[in-house]
Length: 244
View 1 (cartoon, rainbow, N blue to C red):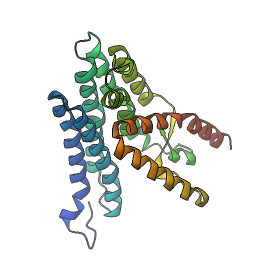
View 2 (view 1 turned 90 degrees about the vertical axis):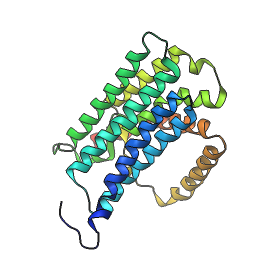
View 3 (view 1 turned 45 degrees about the horizontal axis):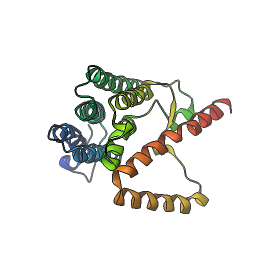
View 4 (view 1 turned 45 degrees about the vertical axis):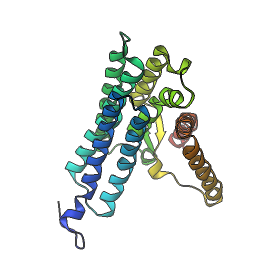
């Protein structure tokens, strides 16, 4: 790792420290699940997602990208968005079901496969230029967000069909399948917003913030469903770019 003028070695370790915080936050969600504080589980995984969004940007800003940082980030994602959500979902909605543990294992394994494929594609030089706009399959934080929809609804509305063993198990398997699928999903890092859409987008951001503050778990469910509703557009855009 080369030395960058203006930044001390300690400051340049900051991205890796944020990654470690993401790992600790995600794993803490399991501890909260064990004491029955499922609202804190959601907060812990959300904190892990926030740290995951920050560490890469910090690494680029400080010119502190390194191979160990990339490997640490993948391992953190596996724990925070694969193992931890699988265990939280099992403890909350699948414990006592004979197939519940199998579902948790499938989700965690699919997360590992998704991250392994992502790391492999980083070195693939044969991809077309437009491929940088997309992920292959649903990315790790989004998959954890989507898998938690039944839990968000339960935290907001209480018991219902969304919290039944069958619904929780099937939905977790759907989220796992989306991770290892070949579906193209948008990479927010490459999204360009036309100037005429900036004002409406800011209004939507404000509306989303208001919903998340007043009804956070319902808001998370709406955001997750909205993400899924974007998939048909993403597939259409990918195919259009491939043709043109």
